Length: 111
Image: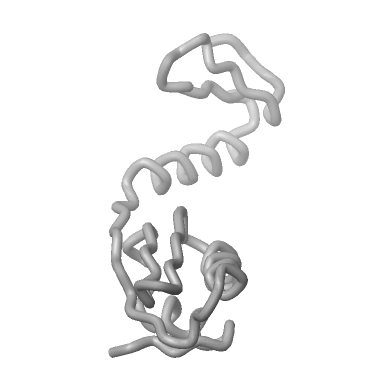
């Protein structure tokens, strides 16, 4: 493996973007290994949440923006006509965190 600057990566033109980092800087290598391991192994879940109080596209955007700022959320789609929010997120994100985020944005989660 060739030695690289610790902040630069070589993808070796791999379709999977396998990254090799400088082995001389063990702290960087260990950190990158942990990050990659977590990214590859954390399962995602999809859920549909019933939400009331959304009446327009602006409301949808408010909910989507609030949830996208929640760590672990990868995709959000709100629909004010159906009173639903579809969310794709990491398993480690709790339902309470998602619900609290929606409520802090000014909308009600239907249990």
